[in-house]
Every structure is written in structure tokens, then in C-alpha cells.
Amino acid sequence: MKETQITAIAIGAVVLSVIAIASAVVLKPAAAVGAGAVGTNELADNSVTSDKIVDGTIRIEDIAEGVIAELTIPDNSITSAMIKDENIGTIDLADNCITSEKIMDENITAADIATGAVTTTEILDGTIATQDIANNAVTYDKMTIKIKCGLATNVVHGSTINHNLGVVPTSVVATPVYDSVIEVGKALLHVNINNVTANTFDVALWVEVEGGLHLPPVLLDKVDGVFWPPESIYWVAIYSP
Image 1: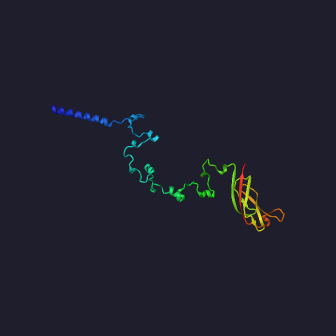
Image 2: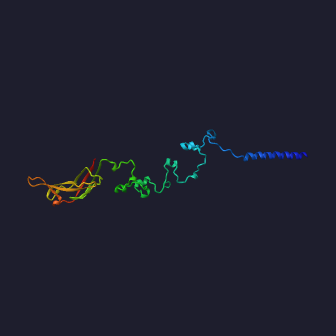
Image 3: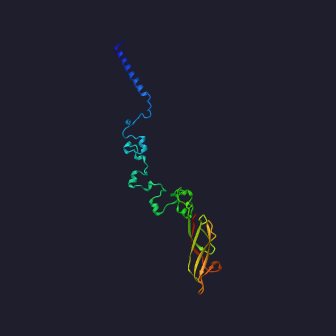
């Protein structure tokens, strides 16, 4: 065999050996990384780890440059920079947000208020439901001593007044608002309370007029024909167990 042939065979064998070794290295399956195999020493100093995520100690230097690009944040996102320099514009807020301007000009509409919110309308008409009140709130039902008061207008002798205490009061006090002069002379108006129930009571109005010479004052039931226009009555109903 010629020397050139031997040399060519030798070179071919070396090339085939190199290809076989390279193929074995490239095609060899990667070994799975076991739990705990990668420790702190294997991580770069500023690597983001689960511990940093949990305790919130991820710093700017832990995030690779360009990971969060400006293009990934919507134009109207509220960022920490906006909060610091107060540069939060109307475009950054939802349409129905309650802002300081709405509070000052009282331009808060029903769309700005949560479904179960307590509003002035509910306060005025008394339709505040149980679900609108916190569990530990002090309510009228929880009060041992119950007190209600009011002003009843256009009251005449025998009128019924609604006190709505919810229980029969242990005491009802009423006093009239009146003009002390009538056609028959100086007079005083008195109020008696009758027929008290858990929600109402009746009133009896009495007129005390001056008697004749050296005579005592006379009390007249208004039903007996003494003229007196409808009155306004202040009243207080109290329940104490």
C-alpha cells in the first residue's frame, strides 16, 4: 500500500473519531437539576429569588435593564413617579371615580356610589337596611333605654301622634307651642296623654282661662266648644326597663 493511501486513511479515522465524540457531547441528554441543587452560591448577587418576591425586597438593581420597558406600561398607568409629583391627570382616572372636585362641587352621581352605600336619601327616608350597617355598630335595637322625640303640628283635641318607639314607653311628656292670648282673655294650654301604645299616643288639650272676680281659673275641655286653633306639640317618649 502506498504511503499516501495510509496517510489518507489515518486522517479519515481521526476525523471520524472527532465527529463521534462531538456528537456524543451534543446529543447527550441534560441531567435534571435536583431540588436544592442550586444554592445561593450559584446565583448572581442581584438574582431575583422567591424569597425576595415574598418579602418584597426586590430592588431596581435586581431587574435586568430593559425587562420592564416604558412601552409595556399603558400611557395612563399610575406609577410611583406620578404619585410622588402629584402628576395624576383626569385621563389616569376611571370615568366614575370620586375626586376632590366632585366632593367640593357635590357633583357625585348615583353611578359614582357603590350599590350598598348609605346615601342622604336613605338617611332621610329611613330605608337603611341591615346590610348597610357594620356588624358591631350601635343600633336602636341594641339600646336598652330608648328615647324618641318630635314636633307634631296641626294638633287638635283628641289627635293621635306616632312616636314609633317600638315598645310601650314608660313615660311620655308633651308641651304645647301656643299663643297665650285668646278672645276670652288670658289663657294657658295644657296637654294630657291618653291611650299610649308601642307606636302612638293620643292627646287631650285643655284650656285654662282666668275666672271671674275672686274666682279660680277654669279648665275647659276643648271639645266643650272653646275656640282654639290647631296647635304644635313638642313630645318626648321614653322607655326604661
